[in-house]
Length: 71
Image (cartoon, rainbow, N blue to C red; front, side, top):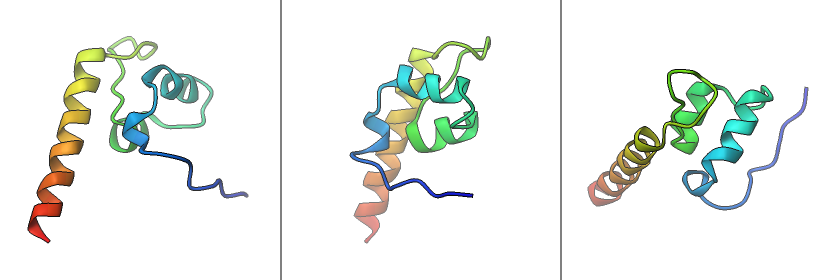
């Protein structure tokens, strides 16, 4: 068992195709792709759904703003 580093930068800014590559290689699950990186796959499970990814990332940003405003 091993633990990876914290990474660099905002995960939501990561290139969706790089996240797709990680999914295809078993490094990242589809759930983590959507929840952490904001990347949504198309129905075929082998390509990025660009419109859904944009919408998911917009929701993540909105949730962050809402959380910050509540503080």
